[in-house]
Image 1 (cartoon, helix red, strand yellow):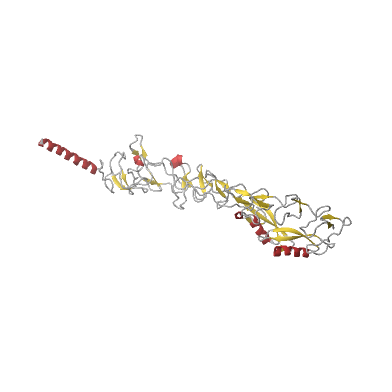
Image 2 (cartoon, rainbow, N blue to C red):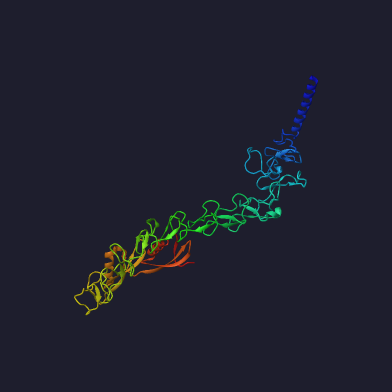
Length: 464
């Protein structure tokens, strides 16, 4: 038994010695191919060819491990490179190991032989793909198509114009402008562009695709659609609200569904204070139950409050009726109660001689008797934005009409004449439109244009 045990130990010792010797020579699991100058490891279960570890490559001409990856150096050929035929990606726990066989700007001259085990070529890294117009890098141990890198002189990104042609393709700029080829790595297109069908297209504006970095929609006049694939116009009537809320134009508001809804006219919702629409919540009529009720104008229902009729008509049986002409009710809301020289007789306008009793003497807006020059004279009323409306006052002179207007509106009543000023108003949804604004001068008219065209650009002159 003792002799058998001694023989067994002897055999084991010889096996261990052989195992260690094989490992030292580059075979077996205990490899020493991880320092420059050491012998390359032999084929194993990970890499079926001579190779090295720890960021080194096997120089097949000498059989020694060497620094790898740069042009002219051996290809890196460890367990995680393309020589393993496993296609590793991502990060490695051991930062000294390599995934890429060659550094950026180089390609590995190695091709798998038909036997599927050995490799053809020099197994050295060759510089390529870093000059505009030069050949693309050839397919190699890791990449099956031609490819390019950044231009060595300008730093501009390059891409192979025909990756399937390999080194027969040419390196061209990519990712810079609309219509450029998309780049192959990192962000395929510069900011403000997005890749579609291999090309870079402009993104972020109405009817364009959304951008894939930064704000998906740009310019503040569009928002992403439900699928987040395209930008749709925002801020106009029945369009989504602007990105920051609100709408582009007066006379609409952002409702609970975040849609810009028209407001302020008869039958429409009342404009809420936050809508940015100046004045009362209804331009026509008054707000009743959150809706604008059309009232106060001729042949409309009367409005509630102290001014049931708003255009000089008179309330009759719940509606506003015309007044001031022969046979009509006298106009009590105006300084003159009847037109064309008629007198107000018993609440009805009648001509001289047709009266059944004493009438009332006609008066101008300032309470003066009629003269041969008395008529309705227009006066301009300017609001805080420079916008002008014209109101008529019954007066014998322009000065008297202005005096009456200033008694009612103060300095907002301005003397004429007014000018007409043309502007090019460019809005995101409608483009450039030629518009004319009345005003006392160019600055006042432009102030009105900018106040009423919210979200638009206002410039003097005509559209291009």
